[in-house]
Length: 398
Image (tube, rainbow, N blue to C red; front, top):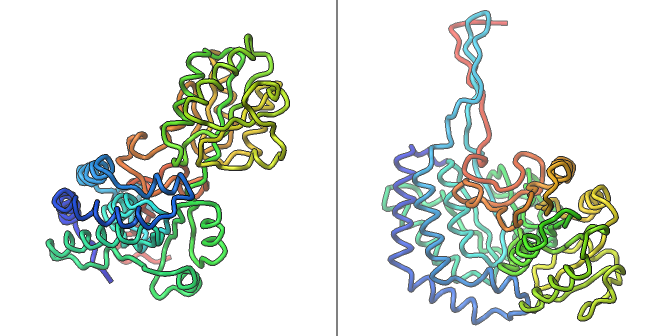
């Protein structure tokens, strides 16, 4: 069992790790090039997530330095009470213990997830995809160097080089105590983990996000938000997939034509329901199940809804529970939308691309949960803890 490190020790490891990434940048990029060269390139989003460049290196370093500056999330008192008999009762934050994260293609998760877990006093088991193996092994080796340089055991950060069968066996019969599992990837991965896991699972990764353009929307604002949410990073789970247009919007056809023309500049495939099927350069929606799909691609669906209530109903039925936005100048409509839409993050007049731990002021994220327990939305340093009751007495009995 690893002895809990004090906050100075944990911060020192994080800062050493940041420096090691800077010093070993060329080694990291060379390993990543091996992964990229071996990747088939069939999945556009996975390829984007797999690539490590200077920007991602900078992001890794920044996340570690920010984590080192964050308050210690452990031992924070949430509740205190003195019993009539003199017993002192308090509740404080405590580590989960051991966390397993299973993820696809993203080497930066090896840094961000491990950093957040370590800072919050948890051991972490990393199970990355085979497509990013070379990158991940280099990064985990740097973690071990950072830990050893401060006389910390390497088992704070471990890498599981398992195939699918070995992963299934580990989920069903873990060879060490597991307290939490986070699958971070596509729906097949999430279903696989939930089927075989024997401890709590927090689901992360599925988007399928909606924007509703109200009749009272600022149309230029709507256009800017939709273009941003759809085209800036198609591999992100906070990217936009569906646009709902109010049936009574003034100049509706003109707006939709203009928006579609702008999307086509980024080679976005546009699928529409019957209301917009006559517009040039679009394809007609043939299967209602497409409303459930997360694309992670240059693809978008447009549909018309007769009312705000219908927009809310549609989002709650088909959406992934991740993010949804309303574009409107009508505050009453916005308030109704934000109260009734059942997503982890809900927006008024802003892009869904902000659903991110760093953007929400959390200093990074382990994952973005679409579950409601124990934390919804970005899981940051403050959330990767459980709690423990402390009772101090002097002989009291009941």
